Image 1 (cartoon, rainbow, N blue to C red):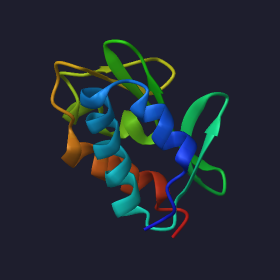
Image 2 (image 1 turned 180 degrees about the vertical axis):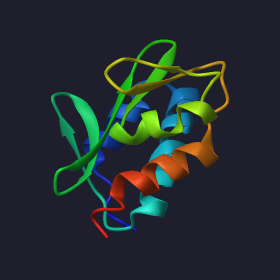
Image 3 (image 1 turned 45 degrees about the horizontal axis):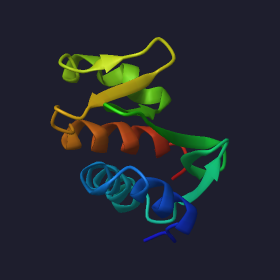
Amino acid sequence: MGIKCKEVSDYFASYGVEKEKRLESIRNIIHDIVPDIKEKMWTKVPCFYIDRTTIVIRVFNDHINIFVDEVFQYKDELLEYKITPKGALQVFDNQVIPFETLSKIFRACFTSVY
């Protein structure tokens, strides 16, 4: 598993225990799928990357945005979620995280890297 960045951990923790659990579960999926992923804080938000391929997570009071280009390929599996025009999957705090679909999206994201 890739090394987890302390700044990302601190950022997740700053949102409280429940939100931190949700964020860490997304982070763990990324690390499970891409064991040598790197992470850093970039423009004050967590980024997970290899070369130019990047996943960005932005946290808001009532939801989490996951920016990944491949999200549009899976829009039919994400009908109960909002996808912004800029390609952010919005997962509201009262919604179940779509782990299976996120796994597919993250795999597709890094297919070109492997």
